[in-house]
Amino acid sequence: MPRAVPVLGVDLAGSASNYFKTRDALVDAIIERFAERDRASWEALAGLVMPRTAQDLAGMLAAYVRRAVGADRVVTIARYGVFIESALRPGSRSQLTESAREVRRWGGRVAAVDRGARPGPGL
Image (cartoon, rainbow, N blue to C red):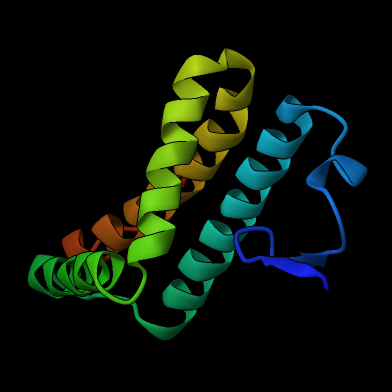
């Protein structure tokens, strides 16, 4: 019977070694999947909600944290595992760094809206 690997979003029949020949390959695939999920989540959020004030942004971030420790608790714990893994494997940091950069760009656009400014070229 196939086992689900929810972090990857696929069903795997048999051993993970059938799909990932090394531990590094498996960890890289997990990190890539997290990056994809985070990008999709932030893009969806940016498309649905554009906070107009710092208070709106604070409320949205508080809701995100409540969800992260509630309904998405398992994903949050897995994310911490990914961060620990990246600390132990410097080669995996670039994937996480790019994902964080995208979130900061989104945050910069939100901050620019709050100040009534237009986002700069890096945002």
